[in-house]
Length: 111
Image (cartoon, rainbow, N blue to C red):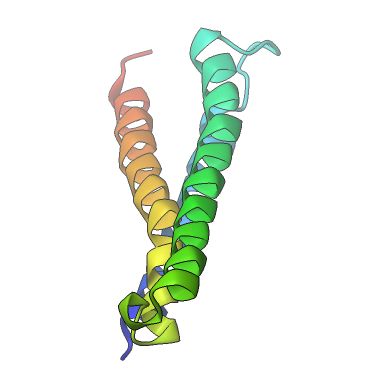
């Protein structure tokens, strides 16, 4: 019953930490972005578009399934919502893990 709610809370928390980590890591030290920062800004937009595309694909599949075979549709709207949020949740948690490793690596790097 609370699966979708917990998933949305986790999505919000990992999104907030991803935004904070990207803000910290994307700040240029000498006024110019380095290669990693430029690639990260490109990947940031591409990941959002890919997650949106995947979520739309799932929504179209659900609508098509509901139209053709209504008995195979998700049993509750919460399950449908959970399936639609899954691409975003997966990407934001992966980004949080990756950016945390990068931030820790930079923090431990001798200057």
